[in-house]
Image (cartoon, rainbow, N blue to C red; front, side):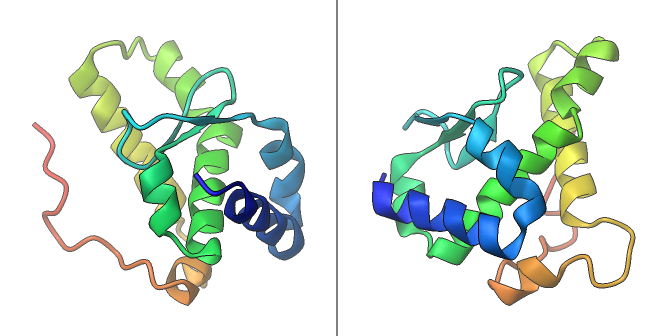
Length: 130
């Protein structure tokens, strides 16, 4: 992935959402074309698919980084461990629940960043769990 774009996205986060900066700059970035978009792990690493990242604007890249940092600071992996979630289907459901918590927090104006950069809300029924 484009190192200049990655640095620009991190700088965007640090200037526009400075409260995420210390976490974001602590996290090593791992390029991995086996994942579809972005991901994190319990070791506080951020994984990204280079081809996906290259298609994003700096602002969209920054939004993805903020999203992943939110998984870390909300300790979604730790919560899943505490609940004994170890199977792939349960992990997927846990990740979807974490995504819902991050993407649609219950307060007015919380989706401003998503709207500003043009990331749309999934349509009803887009995520099927079963």
